[in-house]
Length: 363
Image (tube, rainbow, N blue to C red; front, side):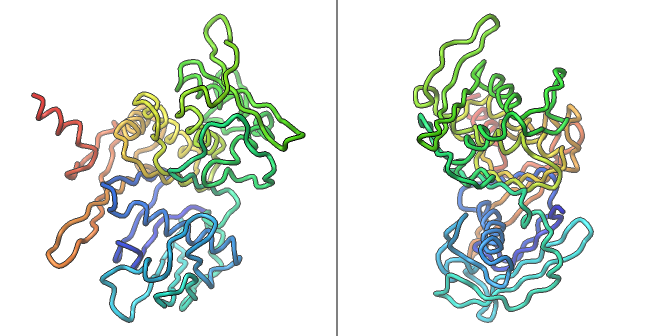
C-alpha cells in the first residue's frame, strides 16, 4: 500500500513538515535545502527494517545511507527533550507512528514509541522497492552476476545481471506496451534506448566462467545494425541511465521507486524523455519519488499530463527553500499544483526559473 502522508519531526534541517504524496513526487530546490533529507528519512526506515525485520531500532549507518551519529541527524534547533519522530499514513488514513531516543553519539537509535505495528505492509517495507542514488555504476566491459538479490542496487550495480536473467521473461505493464504486443522488459529497454540515444541498443552476454555479464552497444538505423561497441567506448550517459530505465520499466502497482538526479550526464532531449518515462511508470500505480534539478525532466512530466498519460492530481511537487529568519535558517516547502494542461499555478523564486532569468539578462 502506498504512502499517502509523511510527517517528519526534527529530522536534519526539517523541523516539523508534512508531505502529501502522490504517485509521482518531484523534489526540487537549491543544494542543501532538504531534498535529500526526505529521501534519507525513507531510506533509514528501509535499511532498519531490512536489518532487524522490525522498527525497534533506527540504523543510521547501513545498506543505503551512512548518516553518522544521532547528533548529525537531529534538527539543530530542537528542544533538549525532543527526538526524531515519524508519522506515516497510508491510503486508508491508517497511521504508523515512530519516535526514537536521542543519544548524541549513538549510531543506532532505540524506539521510544511505536504504534500501529500492523502497518508494515506499506510499500517502503515491501519487496518491490528500488533506490537509485545519484552515484550510479559507470561504463565497464563486464559486470558481476554473482548477486542473487533481485533489487537493482543503490548504484544500479545489479541492473545488468537482472536484465540478463529476466529481460526476456519479465512482463512489463500495458502502459509501456506498443502495437507489437511484445510484453517483455528487454524489448522495451531497447525501444527506449533507441528513442533516447538515436538508435543505440544494448547487447548483453553471460560469461559463466567469470560470473559476469558482458555489455556492448550497437547502433540500429533503418537498414542495418552496426558492429557492437564496448560500453567504455560509448557515451558515459548511456550506461549511467540504464538502471533508471530498468527500474521504471519494471514498475508495477504499489512499488516504491526512489531516484536521485535521473538527468545526470544526459542531454536535454534525453532528460525530457526520462520525464515522460517517469510519468508512465507512476501511471502504473507505482509510487515514484524523484529528486531533480532539471527543468527538462519537469517539462517531460508536464507534457505527459497534457497528453493524458497521467492525471495531474497524481503528480506532487515539493520545492524546498531555505529562508533566513534572523537567528537561524528555516526550510520552507512549497507545493505548486499542476492542471490538466500541464500548467503550474505558482513559481516560487528559484523553482526552475533560471532559464527565464538568463533570458531577461540577455534581452
